Image (tube, rainbow, N blue to C red):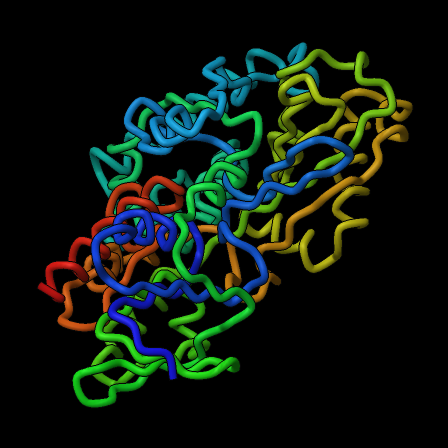
Length: 407
């Protein structure tokens, strides 16, 4: 049995943040990761010479995002150009008058959340009955929250939105590449899922298929479905944490990359919304960094339907939407090169957390203090959930708490 001071469970942004904080502090540390790679939901896949982010890709709230400074210190380039999100290339399929009306509908919905929030805390209840642009607002919720408005807490959504800025930058080498590169030289065991944590006197025992680990303190950074569904069994005194995790499910947002037959057919760094009248439509970023690809983005129920249908069906859907906007010849030239399926990924079960109506306080419960078992991850952040920088901050906080406990 391995004996250590601090065990970190999960090698995503939170686990890496904890490891960075603990490295060189005079404590024995071991990081265990269920998958065979480092980075968690930050995952850059190299395809045909292109680093493609299948997970997080934008440095949100970039002016205060600590990954910006980390990247610069490590020698990564930062792209600070203005995003094309929210624009419609040549206004195709979405005339200016409709764009204005749709934007006004979203602004009205957002204002009601602040000025007259529904007593139910359900974001859907702030929509007008039979509103012409309700599907548009639902589509945006899918991209932002990974879920539809019926399952979204108003208080939770506002906590994030009030803290976030509109400054979004990128890492050309890949956000996932950046995150994974920041794991310090500590002992790591990949392909080692922790199935159970139990008490053993004044120690915790982590049971894995590769043997047990005995630790004085453990930092748990696994995704909320793992806790909610018993993928990681904990002592009964942590039932409240597991119940909180169940109220913070992961929404779904997937990416699909299609290679262009003729890159010059569309300008670089441009964008199209597939169908503004459909809640399940795709959002398409054309030629990011000038690369010969289209990055499709799908959220909420639309993402779930496409994921269950498979990558080829998702690519066919994207070709159909893009063909309706840019012509059948353009669509026929698109070739699938990569796709994510976070809902089916072992150890995840989704993309990023959202609080169910009436349960925004579950984040505080999940991240609460303890004398032995600490929790971190994007779901533990009250305002920066769903982001790699939110995960990083909670991992650092858990590491500081672990060091204080051992002192």
